[in-house]
Length: 137
Length: 137
DNA sequence: AAGTAAGTGCAAAGCCTTCGCAATTAGTGT
DNA sequence: ACACTAATTGCGAAGGCTTTGCACTTACTT
Ligand SMILES: [Mn+2]
Ligand SMILES: [Mn+2]
Ligand SMILES: [Zn+2]
Ligand SMILES: [Zn+2]
Image (cartoon, rainbow over all chains, first blue to last red; front, top):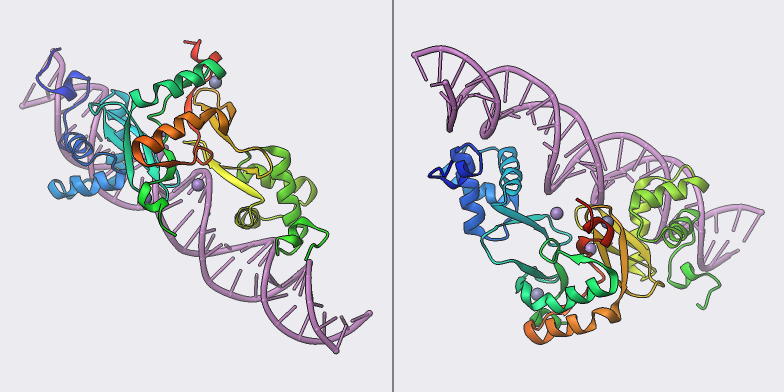
C-alpha cells in the first residue's frame, strides 16, 4: 500500500479511461456524465459512455467524486476535494451558485432541532431564481 | 363563468379521467404519476398513463396541483390547497417530512441577502436522514 | 511470461416521460 | 334532441438517460 497513485491507493486499477474520467470531473466542475464523456473523448476518442457511467460510480464509491441533483436536469458530478457546498440553481437560466456549507449551518441546525432531520444540503440543489432572472418579466 | 365546477372554472373540460386524476392527487399526497394512475384505475381501469401525465401537466398549469422533486426518485404531485411546504426526504427510508415554509424564512432570507437568490424551497426536496435512520448502523 | 480478475466496448434492455395520430367525447349552438 | 368543433383520450412508438449482459481486452499478481 501507500502506492504512488491515488487510484491504486483506493484499490482501483489504473486505466487510461478511469484517470481521464477523474481528470474531467475535476476540470469541469458540476459536469453531467455526457459532458465528462465529451471531455474525455478529446484525449481518448474511443471511450464508451457506459464506461464513463461505471467509472463515475466507482470513483464515487471510493470517495473521489460526488454527485448532486439540480432538479429537472440530470445528475452532476464534482470532485470531492472542492469544499462542501450547496447549489442554488436558477430555474430560468440554469446558473449554479455555490454556497459554502457554513452559510447553511443555522438552517440545518433548525431542521435537526425541529424535526430530528440530519440534512445533506450537498446532495440536492435548492431551486429558485437568480437576481437578474428575478428582475426580468 | 362562475360555473359550478372547479375544473370548468379554470377553463378545462370536465372529463372523468381529469376529475379522477385530481382526486387521486388530493387523496394520495406526494404521489408519483404512476401512483396516481394506479389509484385512478381502481375506478376507471381503462385510463392510460399518458392521459395521467397530460392531466397532471394541465392541472398544474391552472394551479390546481404542483410537483416537486425528491431527488433520485421521480416527480411527485400534490394538491395546491395544501399549505406551501418544503420536503425533507430521508435517503434511507424514503420518508417525507413536510416543513411549513415559514420555518425556512430566515434561511431563504439569508440566501437573498447573501446571493440575491430568490429561493423556491417547495420545488426540490432537501435530502438527509431522518432521526431513526440516523441512529442506525 | 502466464494467469486471473477487473475493466472496457458494444449492443440491447430498462425506466420514465413525451409525441403523433386516429378515434372518442365534452361543451356549444341550433 | 342533433349536429358541430375542438379538446381530450388511448394506443403505440419514440425519446432521453442510465443500466446490464457478455465477450474481449488489459492491468496487476505470481
Ligand atoms: Mn420541476
Ligand atoms: Mn443522488
Ligand atoms: Zn438565472
Ligand atoms: Zn429514514
